[in-house]
Amino acid sequence: VALANGTDPHTALARLRQLEEALRRGCAACYAAEGIYPQDLEYLEEHYGVQVDGDRYVVHYEIFAQNLMPDITVLENKP
Image (cartoon, rainbow, N blue to C red; front, side, top):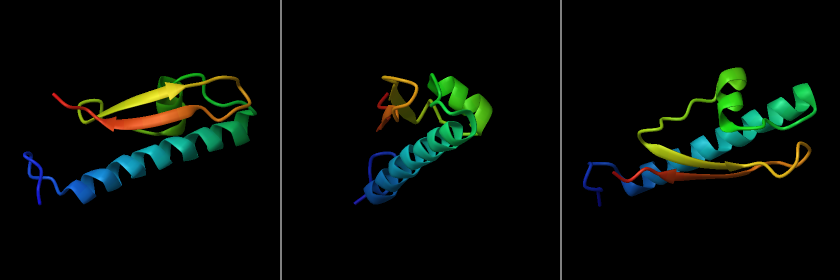
């Protein structure tokens, strides 16, 4: 079964999970290097090389405290 855009749903789900994992690894790298988690997604992208295709994905990034892993949710961007 393929989605309307020709993408296999299993592949699309795998890409979502890969991006979410990359974001979590970037957060962990920031915490290890700086002692705090990134204050926002832009900082993570600028300083830790994580790239988010904003046309394809929406990222919910919510930080509660500098010493707690942010809540990260990645969703497919529906036009």
